[in-house]
Image (cartoon, rainbow, N blue to C red; front, side, top):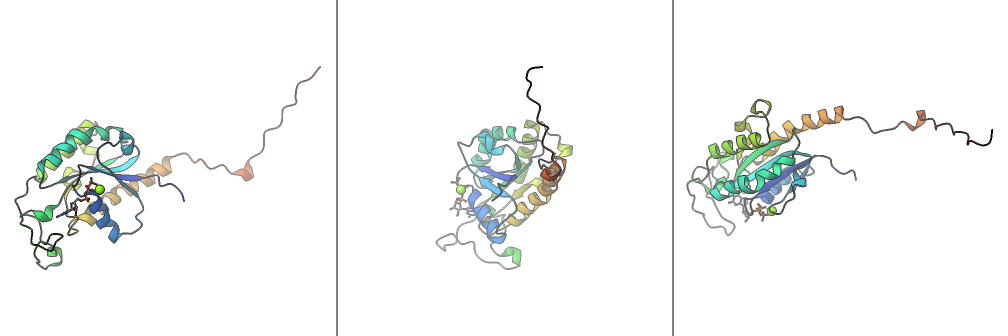
Length: 212
Ligand SMILES: Nc1nc2c(ncn2[C@@H]2O[C@H](COP(=O)(O)OP(=O)(O)OP(=O)(O)O)[C@@H](O)[C@H]2O)c(=O)[nH]1
Ligand SMILES: [Mg+2]
């Protein structure tokens, strides 16, 4: 099988919901065109090299998880290419008072049940979208990227719920819509490594020098 040459990297503190976001999306879109990779601490910066996009994930109920993005993960983005896109994702919005209830997108209302089937109390959101927007701008600055050349912060900062599926498709589809044309352009610009063997003539063998 050909090794995929584009990847989207998911970064973020433990437990913010990286795996759940991927699982939720893949449930919908089995066999996505891009290789999705996620990990946490101890990551080498090589993970971000050649990434088409980097998703930095935090938990909207844990302000420290946003702080960790800046303290531990911002540095990893410096090996990203200049074409790499960034998205900031605040997950677990279903646990907040402001977040949509499960099924609300479909026009129904149902209680917010936890994994044991109990109604979990909804709390005020601890991290606001403006904080994510500020981090997005910091990332661009850190990587010396011009805001004018990059997608707007408002387009690239999401609040999601891997539990209810809220905004999960929107997140990945927004990224794919932006990333696919960039990859196609890179492929078109890259010199072809294919050699047409039918037109290839072997070099004439030089006569071995001997005595005159
Ligand atoms: N309520 C709620 N729980 C979530 C959501 N996303 C994930 N979880 C729960 O949070 C816990 C951690 O989720 P994971 O997806 O394993 O988190 P992770 O970031 O991959 O964690 P690590 O791989 O350990 O770094 C699990 O119990 C999930 O069920 C969400 O959107 N809402
Ligand atoms: Mg995980």
